[in-house]
Image (spheres, rainbow, N blue to C red):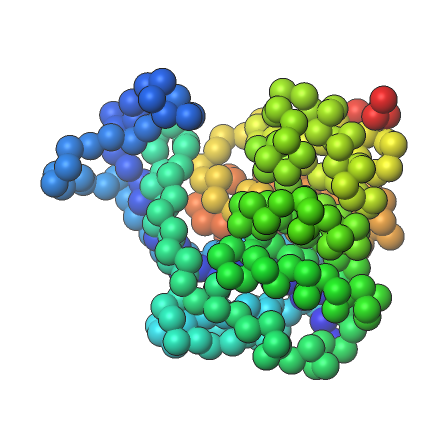
Length: 328
């Protein structure tokens, strides 16, 4: 019996370490920066490597590392990357009974990391969008304690309601990390499902899009999220830490200062770390925050989304600063 089932993508990741000098500064881009090179040119890379990732897989590995019995529900292609992902999950001890093999290539991502420790991702969203919720072996799940729904993209985003409804019908707790496709559905469509979930996870940009409140009004965003969702609301801010609200209590958590090697999977590491912390501490929110920050910090110190994840007995509690207040 799995204590937790993760939903989301499974991806074959190709990491490219780009040479220095390719990042340009310009107001023409929303971030103020861009990677630029001549069209038709050949670029010599400093390094490259392959790994597995995707929200559903990344989060499953965090729960596994935290000593929890976990299964992954998703779809992969009938190809070498898909078979390798299934083999890795099986060999690691993650349940694979709910994986569907579909007639579309497995998701692929090319992650371009620059010398400034920023990344640009080229994503092919293939097989993961083809998961057929109606063909999931729901009766074989044996009532896990939690569902963790990583961002669902494309057609699969429309399955959010069905997954949440099944969970609530079977008294399964739900944590959901909304992706852009789900947010684009609008609060009128998402609202009924969000009222049913226990933990809502967003980054600051996503929270702003969902609430229609500017990113610089963080208290306004958290206040609005409390109206939209009755449970625990988590908003990550990258190097600036995270905000977490549990009803009227607001936690302001500070990120740890470390040398960043690769940010890939940091959001998944935070979200799954938070939920695993809740599970292991009998719903202690502060403990969940500490485990989340520690897991994300550990993740970004090494290349790849799953290679640096925190282990169950790793010590971290005394290194993380959290301030507690109230939402006015």
